[in-house]
Length: 252
Length: 310
Ligand SMILES: Cc1cc2nc3c(=O)[nH]c(=O)nc-3n(C[C@H](O)[C@H](O)[C@H](O)COP(=O)(O)OP(=O)(O)OC[C@H]3O[C@@H](n4cnc5c(N)ncnc54)[C@H](O)[C@@H]3O)c2cc1C
Ligand SMILES: Nc1ncnc2c1ncn2[C@@H]1O[C@H](COP(=O)(O)O)[C@@H](O)[C@H]1O
Picture 1: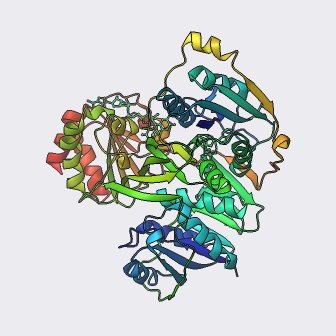
Picture 2 (picture 1 turned 45 degrees about the horizontal axis):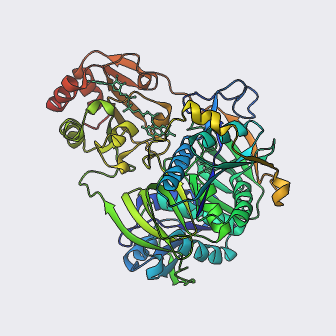
Picture 3 (picture 1 turned 90 degrees about the vertical axis):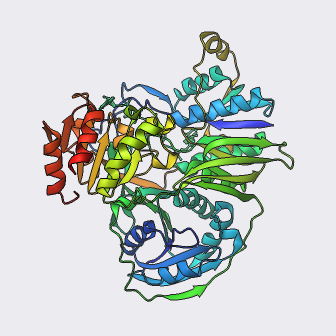
Protein backbone atom coordinates (compact mmCIF):
# COMPACT_ATOMS: atom_id res chain seq x y z
CA UNK A 1 0.00 0.00 0.00
CA UNK A 2 0.96 3.59 -0.51
CA UNK A 3 1.51 6.04 2.35
CA UNK A 4 0.89 9.73 1.89
CA UNK A 5 2.83 12.13 4.13
CA UNK A 6 1.85 15.82 4.18
CA UNK A 7 4.78 18.01 5.24
CA UNK A 8 4.67 21.71 6.04
CA UNK A 9 7.45 24.25 5.74
CA UNK A 10 7.53 26.29 8.94
CA UNK A 11 9.83 28.49 10.99
CA UNK A 12 12.66 26.38 12.43
CA UNK A 13 11.79 25.31 15.96
CA UNK A 14 15.02 26.78 17.33
CA UNK A 15 14.17 30.28 16.13
CA UNK A 16 12.38 32.66 18.46
CA UNK A 17 9.53 34.18 16.44
CA UNK A 18 9.24 37.99 16.32
CA UNK A 19 5.94 39.74 15.85
CA UNK A 20 5.96 42.36 13.07
CA UNK A 21 5.75 45.99 14.16
CA UNK A 22 2.56 46.56 12.16
CA UNK A 23 0.76 43.73 13.94
CA UNK A 24 -0.02 41.78 10.77
CA UNK A 25 1.87 38.63 11.63
CA UNK A 26 5.20 37.10 12.50
CA UNK A 27 8.31 38.26 10.69
CA UNK A 28 9.54 35.42 8.47
CA UNK A 29 11.94 37.45 6.31
CA UNK A 30 15.45 35.98 6.54
CA UNK A 31 14.34 33.48 9.14
CA UNK A 32 15.50 29.86 9.00
CA UNK A 33 12.68 27.61 7.78
CA UNK A 34 12.53 23.83 8.20
CA UNK A 35 10.18 20.91 7.99
CA UNK A 36 7.62 20.95 10.80
CA UNK A 37 9.19 18.67 13.48
CA UNK A 38 6.10 16.46 13.73
CA UNK A 39 6.19 15.95 9.96
CA UNK A 40 9.78 14.71 10.11
CA UNK A 41 8.48 12.09 12.51
CA UNK A 42 5.67 11.28 10.04
CA UNK A 43 8.14 10.85 7.17
CA UNK A 44 10.35 8.65 9.36
CA UNK A 45 7.42 6.44 10.31
CA UNK A 46 6.32 6.04 6.70
CA UNK A 47 9.84 5.21 5.56
CA UNK A 48 10.19 2.63 8.35
CA UNK A 49 6.92 1.03 7.27
CA UNK A 50 8.32 0.82 3.76
CA UNK A 51 11.56 -0.70 5.05
CA UNK A 52 9.49 -3.29 6.93
CA UNK A 53 7.68 -4.16 3.71
CA UNK A 54 4.33 -2.83 4.91
CA UNK A 55 4.30 0.09 2.49
CA UNK A 56 5.24 0.00 -1.18
CA UNK A 57 5.58 3.70 -1.84
CA UNK A 58 5.88 6.86 0.25
CA UNK A 59 4.55 10.07 -1.28
CA UNK A 60 5.30 13.42 0.38
CA UNK A 61 2.96 16.35 -0.25
CA UNK A 62 3.34 19.99 0.64
CA UNK A 63 0.98 22.88 0.11
CA UNK A 64 2.70 26.22 0.11
CA UNK A 65 5.15 28.57 -1.55
CA UNK A 66 7.70 27.49 -4.19
CA UNK A 67 10.30 27.10 -1.43
CA UNK A 68 8.25 24.28 0.06
CA UNK A 69 9.98 22.22 -2.63
CA UNK A 70 13.04 22.28 -0.33
CA UNK A 71 10.98 20.67 2.40
CA UNK A 72 9.83 18.01 -0.04
CA UNK A 73 13.45 17.38 -1.08
CA UNK A 74 14.25 16.78 2.59
CA UNK A 75 11.45 14.22 2.74
CA UNK A 76 12.79 12.58 -0.42
CA UNK A 77 16.29 12.50 1.06
CA UNK A 78 14.87 10.79 4.16
CA UNK A 79 13.44 8.08 1.93
CA UNK A 80 10.15 9.20 0.40
CA UNK A 81 9.83 8.00 -3.21
CA UNK A 82 8.17 10.97 -4.86
CA UNK A 83 6.64 14.30 -3.99
CA UNK A 84 3.78 16.60 -4.90
CA UNK A 85 4.02 20.35 -4.44
CA UNK A 86 0.69 22.16 -4.46
CA UNK A 87 1.95 25.65 -4.96
CA UNK A 88 0.26 28.83 -3.79
CA UNK A 89 1.41 32.14 -2.36
CA UNK A 90 -1.70 32.39 -0.17
CA UNK A 91 -2.03 31.24 3.43
CA UNK A 92 -3.93 27.98 3.36
CA UNK A 93 -5.99 27.16 6.43
CA UNK A 94 -6.21 23.58 7.77
CA UNK A 95 -9.69 23.02 6.29
CA UNK A 96 -8.49 23.88 2.78
CA UNK A 97 -5.30 21.84 3.27
CA UNK A 98 -7.51 18.91 4.27
CA UNK A 99 -9.64 19.38 1.14
CA UNK A 100 -6.59 19.34 -1.12
CA UNK A 101 -5.21 16.27 0.66
CA UNK A 102 -8.56 14.55 0.31
CA UNK A 103 -8.48 15.16 -3.45
CA UNK A 104 -4.96 13.72 -3.60
CA UNK A 105 -6.08 10.74 -1.52
CA UNK A 106 -8.87 10.11 -4.01
CA UNK A 107 -6.29 9.94 -6.82
CA UNK A 108 -3.57 8.00 -5.03
CA UNK A 109 -5.71 5.71 -2.84
CA UNK A 110 -3.17 5.37 0.00
CA UNK A 111 -3.62 2.85 2.81
CA UNK A 112 -2.38 5.35 5.37
CA UNK A 113 -1.97 9.08 5.54
CA UNK A 114 0.50 10.09 8.24
CA UNK A 115 0.53 13.77 9.27
CA UNK A 116 2.06 15.71 12.12
CA UNK A 117 -0.29 16.32 15.02
CA UNK A 118 0.31 20.05 14.89
CA UNK A 119 2.13 22.63 12.81
CA UNK A 120 4.35 24.69 15.11
CA UNK A 121 3.46 27.96 13.37
CA UNK A 122 -0.35 28.06 13.54
CA UNK A 123 -0.52 25.45 16.36
CA UNK A 124 -3.92 24.42 14.95
CA UNK A 125 -3.87 20.66 15.52
CA UNK A 126 -6.70 20.21 13.01
CA UNK A 127 -5.62 19.04 9.57
CA UNK A 128 -5.41 15.28 10.20
CA UNK A 129 -8.78 15.12 11.93
CA UNK A 130 -10.39 17.25 9.21
CA UNK A 131 -8.90 15.11 6.46
CA UNK A 132 -10.16 11.94 8.15
CA UNK A 133 -13.66 13.45 8.33
CA UNK A 134 -13.71 14.53 4.68
CA UNK A 135 -12.25 11.22 3.53
CA UNK A 136 -14.76 9.32 5.67
CA UNK A 137 -12.01 7.32 7.35
CA UNK A 138 -10.90 6.73 10.98
CA UNK A 139 -8.22 8.77 12.73
CA UNK A 140 -5.48 7.85 15.18
CA UNK A 141 -4.25 11.15 16.54
CA UNK A 142 -1.21 11.89 18.75
CA UNK A 143 0.36 8.53 17.97
CA UNK A 144 3.30 7.18 19.94
CA UNK A 145 3.13 3.70 18.33
CA UNK A 146 1.75 2.48 14.99
CA UNK A 147 1.33 -1.18 14.03
CA UNK A 148 -0.20 -2.19 10.72
CA UNK A 149 -2.02 -5.52 10.46
CA UNK A 150 -2.85 -6.72 6.96
CA UNK A 151 -3.27 -4.46 3.96
CA UNK A 152 -5.56 -1.80 2.64
CA UNK A 153 -8.27 -4.36 1.91
CA UNK A 154 -9.65 -5.45 5.25
CA UNK A 155 -6.54 -4.66 7.28
CA UNK A 156 -6.25 -2.46 10.33
CA UNK A 157 -3.82 -0.25 12.16
CA UNK A 158 -3.30 -0.24 15.91
CA UNK A 159 -2.45 3.21 17.14
CA UNK A 160 -1.24 3.98 20.66
CA UNK A 161 -2.20 7.55 21.46
CA UNK A 162 -0.76 10.02 23.96
CA UNK A 163 -3.80 11.32 25.82
CA UNK A 164 -4.39 13.44 28.93
CA UNK A 165 -4.53 10.48 31.29
CA UNK A 166 -1.66 8.49 29.81
CA UNK A 167 -1.83 6.21 26.77
CA UNK A 168 -4.69 4.56 24.93
CA UNK A 169 -4.82 2.19 21.99
CA UNK A 170 -7.38 2.24 19.22
CA UNK A 171 -7.84 -0.07 16.26
CA UNK A 172 -8.71 1.58 12.96
CA UNK A 173 -9.76 -0.11 9.77
CA UNK A 174 -7.65 0.77 6.75
CA UNK A 175 -7.39 3.12 5.02
CA UNK A 176 -6.81 5.45 7.95
CA UNK A 177 -5.30 8.73 9.03
CA UNK A 178 -2.59 8.89 11.72
CA UNK A 179 -1.11 12.01 13.32
CA UNK A 180 2.26 11.79 15.02
CA UNK A 181 3.33 12.76 18.51
CA UNK A 182 6.93 13.44 19.47
CA UNK A 183 7.75 10.07 20.95
CA UNK A 184 6.71 7.97 17.93
CA UNK A 185 10.29 7.76 16.65
CA UNK A 186 13.55 9.65 16.18
CA UNK A 187 13.76 10.92 12.65
CA UNK A 188 16.95 10.10 10.77
CA UNK A 189 19.25 12.68 9.27
CA UNK A 190 19.43 12.54 5.52
CA UNK A 191 22.89 11.41 4.42
CA UNK A 192 24.76 13.33 1.76
CA UNK A 193 24.40 10.57 -0.87
CA UNK A 194 20.67 10.45 -0.14
CA UNK A 195 20.41 14.21 -0.46
CA UNK A 196 22.07 13.91 -3.89
CA UNK A 197 19.79 11.04 -4.90
CA UNK A 198 16.72 13.01 -3.81
CA UNK A 199 17.44 15.59 -6.48
CA UNK A 200 16.46 13.15 -9.20
CA UNK A 201 13.34 11.79 -7.52
CA UNK A 202 10.07 12.95 -9.12
CA UNK A 203 8.43 16.11 -7.79
CA UNK A 204 5.09 16.99 -9.39
CA UNK A 205 3.97 20.63 -9.52
CA UNK A 206 0.30 21.36 -8.92
CA UNK A 207 -1.97 24.17 -7.81
CA UNK A 208 -5.07 24.21 -5.58
CA UNK A 209 -7.14 24.85 -8.73
CA UNK A 210 -5.94 21.52 -10.14
CA UNK A 211 -7.90 19.91 -7.32
CA UNK A 212 -10.84 22.30 -7.57
CA UNK A 213 -10.36 23.50 -4.01
CA UNK A 214 -11.34 27.01 -2.92
CA UNK A 215 -8.64 28.12 -0.48
CA UNK A 216 -10.22 31.45 0.48
CA UNK A 217 -9.65 31.87 4.24
CA UNK A 218 -12.58 31.50 6.62
CA UNK A 219 -10.84 33.29 9.45
CA UNK A 220 -9.87 36.96 9.28
CA UNK A 221 -6.70 37.71 11.19
CA UNK A 222 -7.42 41.10 12.72
CA UNK A 223 -4.21 41.46 14.66
CA UNK A 224 -1.10 39.61 15.77
CA UNK A 225 0.51 40.90 18.96
CA UNK A 226 3.27 40.01 21.37
CA UNK A 227 1.96 38.20 24.44
CA UNK A 228 1.94 40.17 27.65
CA UNK A 229 5.57 40.22 28.69
CA UNK A 230 6.82 38.61 31.81
CA UNK A 231 9.67 40.42 33.44
CA UNK A 232 12.42 38.49 35.11
CA UNK A 233 12.09 38.67 38.86
CA UNK A 234 14.78 38.45 41.43
CA UNK A 235 17.44 35.90 42.20
CA UNK A 236 17.64 34.81 45.79
CA UNK A 237 20.77 33.71 47.59
CA UNK A 238 19.48 30.92 49.75
CA UNK A 239 16.91 28.23 50.24
CA UNK A 240 15.67 30.17 53.26
CA UNK A 241 14.58 33.00 51.00
CA UNK A 242 12.63 30.52 48.89
CA UNK A 243 10.94 29.12 51.96
CA UNK A 244 9.98 32.63 53.06
CA UNK A 245 8.51 33.35 49.63
CA UNK A 246 6.49 30.12 49.60
CA UNK A 247 5.11 31.01 53.03
CA UNK A 248 4.26 34.52 51.87
CA UNK A 249 2.40 33.01 48.89
CA UNK A 250 0.45 30.86 51.29
CA UNK A 251 1.44 27.54 49.77
CA UNK A 252 3.82 26.35 52.50
CA UNK B 1 -30.00 34.31 21.49
CA UNK B 2 -26.89 32.40 20.47
CA UNK B 3 -27.12 28.74 21.41
CA UNK B 4 -23.92 26.97 22.37
CA UNK B 5 -23.34 23.24 22.68
CA UNK B 6 -20.47 22.43 25.05
CA UNK B 7 -18.68 19.07 25.14
CA UNK B 8 -18.62 17.64 28.66
CA UNK B 9 -15.25 16.07 29.45
CA UNK B 10 -15.61 13.02 31.68
CA UNK B 11 -14.47 9.44 32.15
CA UNK B 12 -18.01 7.99 32.19
CA UNK B 13 -17.97 8.24 36.00
CA UNK B 14 -17.08 11.81 36.92
CA UNK B 15 -17.35 15.17 35.23
CA UNK B 16 -13.88 16.63 34.66
CA UNK B 17 -12.93 20.14 35.68
CA UNK B 18 -12.04 21.01 32.09
CA UNK B 19 -15.79 21.04 31.44
CA UNK B 20 -16.26 23.88 33.91
CA UNK B 21 -13.74 26.02 32.07
CA UNK B 22 -15.41 25.27 28.72
CA UNK B 23 -18.82 26.22 30.16
CA UNK B 24 -17.42 29.64 31.07
CA UNK B 25 -16.08 30.08 27.54
CA UNK B 26 -19.41 28.96 26.05
CA UNK B 27 -21.41 31.26 28.32
CA UNK B 28 -19.51 34.25 26.92
CA UNK B 29 -21.06 33.41 23.54
CA UNK B 30 -24.61 32.51 24.56
CA UNK B 31 -26.81 30.03 26.37
CA UNK B 32 -25.03 26.79 27.20
CA UNK B 33 -26.27 23.26 26.68
CA UNK B 34 -23.91 20.54 27.90
CA UNK B 35 -23.56 17.35 25.91
CA UNK B 36 -22.75 14.28 27.96
CA UNK B 37 -21.88 11.54 25.47
CA UNK B 38 -20.60 8.29 26.91
CA UNK B 39 -21.52 4.86 28.23
CA UNK B 40 -23.25 4.52 31.59
CA UNK B 41 -23.05 8.23 32.29
CA UNK B 42 -25.99 8.76 34.68
CA UNK B 43 -23.69 10.10 37.42
CA UNK B 44 -21.99 12.45 34.98
CA UNK B 45 -25.35 13.78 33.80
CA UNK B 46 -26.34 14.33 37.43
CA UNK B 47 -23.19 16.41 37.98
CA UNK B 48 -23.63 18.22 34.65
CA UNK B 49 -27.10 19.51 35.45
CA UNK B 50 -25.80 21.16 38.62
CA UNK B 51 -23.15 23.23 36.88
CA UNK B 52 -24.01 26.91 37.27
CA UNK B 53 -24.96 28.65 34.04
CA UNK B 54 -25.97 25.51 32.15
CA UNK B 55 -29.45 25.77 30.58
CA UNK B 56 -29.88 22.17 29.52
CA UNK B 57 -28.07 18.83 29.46
CA UNK B 58 -28.27 16.38 26.59
CA UNK B 59 -27.28 12.83 27.39
CA UNK B 60 -26.24 10.36 24.70
CA UNK B 61 -25.74 7.10 26.57
CA UNK B 62 -24.48 4.43 24.19
CA UNK B 63 -21.63 1.90 24.33
CA UNK B 64 -20.38 3.41 21.05
CA UNK B 65 -19.66 6.71 22.82
CA UNK B 66 -17.91 5.19 25.84
CA UNK B 67 -14.36 5.82 24.63
CA UNK B 68 -15.21 9.12 22.91
CA UNK B 69 -14.05 7.78 19.55
CA UNK B 70 -14.19 10.73 17.16
CA UNK B 71 -15.57 8.57 14.34
CA UNK B 72 -18.65 7.83 16.46
CA UNK B 73 -19.05 11.03 18.41
CA UNK B 74 -18.51 13.63 15.66
CA UNK B 75 -21.60 12.62 13.62
CA UNK B 76 -23.72 12.81 16.79
CA UNK B 77 -22.47 16.35 17.48
CA UNK B 78 -23.04 17.39 13.86
CA UNK B 79 -26.58 16.07 14.06
CA UNK B 80 -27.25 18.00 17.29
CA UNK B 81 -25.63 21.18 15.98
CA UNK B 82 -28.58 21.74 13.65
CA UNK B 83 -30.13 23.50 16.64
CA UNK B 84 -27.04 25.40 17.78
CA UNK B 85 -24.86 28.27 16.61
CA UNK B 86 -21.63 27.15 18.21
CA UNK B 87 -19.78 24.12 19.50
CA UNK B 88 -17.22 24.53 22.27
CA UNK B 89 -14.93 21.80 23.58
CA UNK B 90 -12.18 22.18 26.16
CA UNK B 91 -8.75 21.87 24.54
CA UNK B 92 -8.17 18.45 26.11
CA UNK B 93 -7.02 15.42 24.17
CA UNK B 94 -10.66 14.47 23.54
CA UNK B 95 -11.61 18.01 22.55
CA UNK B 96 -8.68 18.35 20.17
CA UNK B 97 -9.43 14.96 18.63
CA UNK B 98 -13.14 15.48 18.09
CA UNK B 99 -13.71 19.17 17.32
CA UNK B 100 -11.84 19.36 13.99
CA UNK B 101 -13.74 16.31 12.76
CA UNK B 102 -16.97 18.15 13.59
CA UNK B 103 -15.77 21.34 11.90
CA UNK B 104 -14.83 19.56 8.67
CA UNK B 105 -18.17 17.73 8.51
CA UNK B 106 -19.87 21.13 8.84
CA UNK B 107 -17.45 22.74 6.36
CA UNK B 108 -16.36 25.41 8.82
CA UNK B 109 -12.95 26.45 10.08
CA UNK B 110 -12.12 25.58 13.66
CA UNK B 111 -10.73 28.14 16.06
CA UNK B 112 -8.27 26.23 18.24
CA UNK B 113 -7.26 26.92 21.79
CA UNK B 114 -8.98 30.27 22.31
CA UNK B 115 -7.76 32.41 25.21
CA UNK B 116 -10.49 35.05 25.21
CA UNK B 117 -13.80 35.87 23.58
CA UNK B 118 -13.54 39.37 22.08
CA UNK B 119 -16.87 39.53 20.27
CA UNK B 120 -19.62 37.27 18.93
CA UNK B 121 -17.21 35.84 16.35
CA UNK B 122 -13.87 37.25 17.46
CA UNK B 123 -11.33 35.45 19.61
CA UNK B 124 -7.70 35.53 20.65
CA UNK B 125 -5.54 32.46 20.36
CA UNK B 126 -1.84 31.68 20.79
CA UNK B 127 0.32 30.88 17.77
CA UNK B 128 4.03 30.04 17.44
CA UNK B 129 4.12 28.31 20.84
CA UNK B 130 2.53 31.33 22.47
CA UNK B 131 5.17 33.74 21.15
CA UNK B 132 2.38 35.64 19.41
CA UNK B 133 -1.31 36.12 20.10
CA UNK B 134 -3.61 36.33 17.09
CA UNK B 135 -7.01 38.00 17.13
CA UNK B 136 -9.19 36.18 14.61
CA UNK B 137 -12.72 36.63 13.37
CA UNK B 138 -14.74 33.79 11.94
CA UNK B 139 -16.73 34.30 8.75
CA UNK B 140 -18.51 30.94 9.01
CA UNK B 141 -22.18 30.49 9.84
CA UNK B 142 -21.41 28.20 12.77
CA UNK B 143 -18.54 28.31 15.22
CA UNK B 144 -16.43 25.33 16.23
CA UNK B 145 -14.05 26.18 19.04
CA UNK B 146 -11.65 24.57 21.47
CA UNK B 147 -11.03 26.63 24.60
CA UNK B 148 -7.78 26.66 26.52
CA UNK B 149 -8.79 25.87 30.08
CA UNK B 150 -6.30 28.30 31.59
CA UNK B 151 -7.98 31.15 29.68
CA UNK B 152 -11.35 30.76 31.38
CA UNK B 153 -12.23 30.53 35.06
CA UNK B 154 -14.18 27.51 36.23
CA UNK B 155 -17.96 27.74 36.33
CA UNK B 156 -19.33 26.78 39.74
CA UNK B 157 -19.86 23.02 39.90
CA UNK B 158 -23.10 23.43 41.79
CA UNK B 159 -26.01 25.84 41.95
CA UNK B 160 -27.59 25.02 38.59
CA UNK B 161 -30.58 22.83 37.92
CA UNK B 162 -30.71 22.22 34.20
CA UNK B 163 -33.24 19.94 32.56
CA UNK B 164 -31.75 16.67 31.36
CA UNK B 165 -32.94 15.07 28.11
CA UNK B 166 -31.77 11.94 26.37
CA UNK B 167 -30.59 12.10 22.77
CA UNK B 168 -29.39 9.40 20.43
CA UNK B 169 -27.26 9.27 17.34
CA UNK B 170 -26.13 6.71 14.83
CA UNK B 171 -23.84 5.03 17.37
CA UNK B 172 -20.97 2.94 16.05
CA UNK B 173 -19.66 4.16 12.69
CA UNK B 174 -17.87 0.83 12.27
CA UNK B 175 -14.51 2.44 11.50
CA UNK B 176 -12.67 2.17 14.79
CA UNK B 177 -12.65 0.47 18.15
CA UNK B 178 -11.13 1.09 21.54
CA UNK B 179 -8.55 -1.53 22.53
CA UNK B 180 -7.32 -0.38 25.91
CA UNK B 181 -5.70 2.27 28.03
CA UNK B 182 -2.73 2.62 30.32
CA UNK B 183 -3.79 5.16 32.86
CA UNK B 184 -1.24 6.17 35.42
CA UNK B 185 -3.09 6.49 38.70
CA UNK B 186 -1.72 9.07 41.07
CA UNK B 187 -2.64 10.28 44.52
CA UNK B 188 -1.32 13.73 43.74
CA UNK B 189 -3.45 16.63 42.52
CA UNK B 190 -4.15 16.65 38.80
CA UNK B 191 -1.52 18.64 36.92
CA UNK B 192 -3.93 20.93 35.10
CA UNK B 193 -5.92 21.93 38.17
CA UNK B 194 -3.32 21.87 40.95
CA UNK B 195 -2.66 25.10 42.91
CA UNK B 196 1.03 24.32 42.94
CA UNK B 197 3.02 22.41 40.33
CA UNK B 198 6.56 21.10 40.75
CA UNK B 199 8.21 20.13 37.46
CA UNK B 200 11.49 18.38 36.86
CA UNK B 201 13.74 18.39 33.81
CA UNK B 202 16.57 16.48 32.25
CA UNK B 203 18.78 17.26 35.24
CA UNK B 204 16.88 14.67 37.30
CA UNK B 205 18.99 11.86 35.78
CA UNK B 206 16.62 8.88 35.88
CA UNK B 207 13.22 7.72 37.13
CA UNK B 208 14.44 6.87 40.64
CA UNK B 209 16.25 10.17 41.08
CA UNK B 210 13.24 12.08 39.75
CA UNK B 211 10.98 10.28 42.21
CA UNK B 212 13.27 10.65 45.23
CA UNK B 213 13.97 14.34 44.52
CA UNK B 214 10.77 15.83 43.12
CA UNK B 215 8.05 13.83 44.87
CA UNK B 216 8.99 14.77 48.47
CA UNK B 217 8.88 18.46 47.49
CA UNK B 218 5.56 18.03 45.72
CA UNK B 219 4.14 16.17 48.71
CA UNK B 220 5.21 18.92 51.12
CA UNK B 221 3.42 21.49 48.99
CA UNK B 222 0.43 19.37 47.99
CA UNK B 223 1.54 19.94 44.43
CA UNK B 224 0.90 18.28 41.09
CA UNK B 225 3.97 16.97 39.30
CA UNK B 226 5.03 17.97 35.81
CA UNK B 227 8.07 17.50 33.61
CA UNK B 228 9.89 18.81 30.58
CA UNK B 229 9.86 16.86 27.36
CA UNK B 230 13.46 15.85 27.94
CA UNK B 231 12.47 14.22 31.24
CA UNK B 232 9.56 12.39 29.61
CA UNK B 233 11.59 11.24 26.60
CA UNK B 234 14.27 9.89 28.89
CA UNK B 235 11.62 7.84 30.67
CA UNK B 236 11.78 9.52 34.09
CA UNK B 237 7.99 9.98 34.11
CA UNK B 238 5.02 9.05 31.86
CA UNK B 239 4.00 11.18 28.88
CA UNK B 240 1.02 12.77 30.60
CA UNK B 241 3.41 14.71 32.87
CA UNK B 242 4.73 16.80 29.98
CA UNK B 243 4.15 20.53 30.23
CA UNK B 244 4.53 22.66 27.11
CA UNK B 245 3.55 23.53 23.57
CA UNK B 246 2.79 19.91 22.89
CA UNK B 247 2.04 18.77 26.40
CA UNK B 248 -0.27 20.15 29.04
CA UNK B 249 -0.94 23.83 29.54
CA UNK B 250 -0.90 24.78 33.19
CA UNK B 251 -1.34 28.05 35.05
CA UNK B 252 -1.11 27.27 38.77
CA UNK B 253 -0.61 29.84 41.49
CA UNK B 254 2.96 28.63 41.91
CA UNK B 255 5.05 26.76 39.34
CA UNK B 256 8.42 25.44 40.47
CA UNK B 257 10.79 24.43 37.66
CA UNK B 258 13.64 22.26 38.86
CA UNK B 259 16.53 21.55 36.50
CA UNK B 260 14.61 22.81 33.48
CA UNK B 261 16.40 25.14 31.05
CA UNK B 262 13.32 27.03 29.82
CA UNK B 263 13.06 26.24 26.10
CA UNK B 264 10.27 28.19 24.37
CA UNK B 265 8.32 24.97 23.91
CA UNK B 266 8.34 24.41 27.67
CA UNK B 267 7.53 28.05 28.51
CA UNK B 268 4.50 27.81 26.19
CA UNK B 269 2.89 25.49 28.71
CA UNK B 270 3.54 27.33 31.97
CA UNK B 271 4.29 30.99 31.48
CA UNK B 272 0.82 32.08 32.54
CA UNK B 273 1.43 30.69 36.03
CA UNK B 274 0.96 33.37 38.70
CA UNK B 275 4.35 32.93 40.35
CA UNK B 276 7.22 31.08 38.70
CA UNK B 277 10.11 29.79 40.77
CA UNK B 278 13.19 28.26 39.14
CA UNK B 279 16.02 26.23 40.58
CA UNK B 280 18.88 25.79 38.15
CA UNK B 281 22.63 25.66 38.53
CA UNK B 282 23.24 27.69 35.38
CA UNK B 283 22.67 31.36 36.13
CA UNK B 284 22.19 32.05 32.41
CA UNK B 285 19.44 29.47 31.94
CA UNK B 286 16.56 31.06 29.95
CA UNK B 287 14.07 30.01 32.63
CA UNK B 288 15.43 32.84 34.80
CA UNK B 289 14.25 35.39 32.22
CA UNK B 290 10.65 34.68 33.18
CA UNK B 291 10.98 33.42 36.75
CA UNK B 292 9.72 35.67 39.52
CA UNK B 293 12.11 34.02 41.87
CA UNK B 294 15.27 32.23 40.88
CA UNK B 295 17.69 30.20 42.93
CA UNK B 296 21.03 29.50 41.27
CA UNK B 297 22.05 26.26 42.95
CA UNK B 298 22.69 22.58 42.50
CA UNK B 299 19.25 21.04 42.82
CA UNK B 300 20.68 18.04 44.65
CA UNK B 301 21.56 20.21 47.61
CA UNK B 302 18.85 22.86 47.25
CA UNK B 303 15.80 20.63 46.91
CA UNK B 304 16.52 18.37 49.94
CA UNK B 305 17.26 21.47 52.00
CA UNK B 306 14.01 23.04 50.85
CA UNK B 307 12.07 19.90 51.73
CA UNK B 308 13.61 19.82 55.20
CA UNK B 309 12.74 23.45 55.86
CA UNK B 310 9.11 23.31 54.75
C1 LIG C 1 8.11 20.40 18.17
C2 LIG C 1 8.67 20.43 19.55
C3 LIG C 1 7.81 20.43 20.61
C4 LIG C 1 8.30 20.45 21.91
N1 LIG C 1 7.39 20.43 22.94
C5 LIG C 1 7.86 20.48 24.20
C6 LIG C 1 6.94 20.51 25.31
O1 LIG C 1 5.72 20.45 25.16
N2 LIG C 1 7.47 20.59 26.56
C7 LIG C 1 8.83 20.65 26.81
O2 LIG C 1 9.23 20.73 27.98
N3 LIG C 1 9.68 20.61 25.78
C8 LIG C 1 9.24 20.52 24.49
N4 LIG C 1 10.15 20.45 23.47
C9 LIG C 1 11.59 20.29 23.80
C10 LIG C 1 12.31 21.59 24.16
O3 LIG C 1 12.77 22.21 22.98
C11 LIG C 1 13.52 21.28 25.07
O4 LIG C 1 14.38 20.37 24.43
C12 LIG C 1 13.15 20.69 26.45
O5 LIG C 1 12.14 21.46 27.06
C13 LIG C 1 14.38 20.65 27.33
O6 LIG C 1 14.09 20.02 28.55
P1 LIG C 1 14.95 20.35 29.87
O7 LIG C 1 14.84 21.80 30.18
O8 LIG C 1 14.54 19.39 30.92
O9 LIG C 1 16.42 19.92 29.44
P2 LIG C 1 17.72 20.80 29.17
O10 LIG C 1 17.45 21.85 28.15
O11 LIG C 1 18.81 19.84 28.93
O12 LIG C 1 17.96 21.55 30.53
C14 LIG C 1 18.40 20.95 31.71
C15 LIG C 1 18.68 22.07 32.71
O13 LIG C 1 19.04 21.51 33.95
C16 LIG C 1 20.07 22.28 34.55
N5 LIG C 1 20.81 21.42 35.48
C17 LIG C 1 21.59 20.34 35.18
N6 LIG C 1 22.06 19.79 36.30
C18 LIG C 1 21.58 20.52 37.36
C19 LIG C 1 21.71 20.44 38.76
N7 LIG C 1 22.43 19.47 39.35
N8 LIG C 1 21.08 21.36 39.50
C20 LIG C 1 20.34 22.33 38.95
N9 LIG C 1 20.18 22.45 37.60
C21 LIG C 1 20.78 21.56 36.82
C22 LIG C 1 20.90 22.76 33.38
O14 LIG C 1 21.58 23.96 33.72
C23 LIG C 1 19.83 22.98 32.31
O15 LIG C 1 19.36 24.32 32.32
C24 LIG C 1 9.69 20.45 22.16
C25 LIG C 1 10.56 20.45 21.09
C26 LIG C 1 10.07 20.44 19.79
C27 LIG C 1 11.03 20.44 18.64
N1 LIG D 1 0.40 23.49 4.05
C1 LIG D 1 0.56 22.22 4.41
N2 LIG D 1 1.19 21.35 3.58
C2 LIG D 1 1.37 20.05 3.94
N3 LIG D 1 0.95 19.55 5.09
C3 LIG D 1 0.33 20.36 5.96
C4 LIG D 1 0.10 21.73 5.66
N4 LIG D 1 -0.55 22.27 6.72
C5 LIG D 1 -0.72 21.28 7.63
N5 LIG D 1 -0.19 20.13 7.18
C6 LIG D 1 -0.15 18.82 7.86
O1 LIG D 1 -1.08 18.84 8.92
C7 LIG D 1 -0.43 18.70 10.19
C8 LIG D 1 -1.17 19.49 11.25
O2 LIG D 1 -1.18 20.86 10.93
P1 LIG D 1 -2.15 21.91 11.67
O3 LIG D 1 -3.51 21.34 11.63
O4 LIG D 1 -2.01 23.17 10.88
O5 LIG D 1 -1.62 22.06 13.06
C9 LIG D 1 1.01 19.12 9.91
O6 LIG D 1 1.89 18.53 10.84
C10 LIG D 1 1.21 18.58 8.50
O7 LIG D 1 1.46 17.18 8.50
